Length: 173
Ligand code: NI
Image (cartoon, rainbow, N blue to C red; front, top):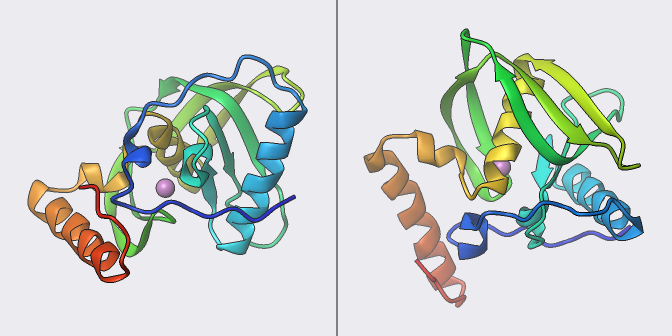
């Protein structure tokens, strides 16, 4: 396993649409292990492959604080969402130290391949549902700040562009 660097806004790679995984092989299992190690070290409760620069449709989630019980989803697809919504104050390892309320369906059903390549389905609620939807958004280039008002979003992105400039990194936005 290896700890990987997490991309942060305004890195343009976070905006790309990720490609489906064709075969769940040892390379993908290695990627999943690296993602888990990186997520736990951060610490975070979810991570998408693109956040470590790999444009593949792979996400890992673990919302349990007490025991390590990760869910690893390859090619996840939301097949159903509840009409009831839920507001949660979300954060993101790619938007460090910023939190804001986002409304999403309270429950969802997701189809995916597990780390052995077996097709599976999970029905999630509460924080797990929020987290899975947040991570699947990453695979489509969407960040949680996209749900905020334009004013708020611009303010957040501007802050990160400024930070990137100050640290001498190129600011592509
Ligand atoms: Ni995120």
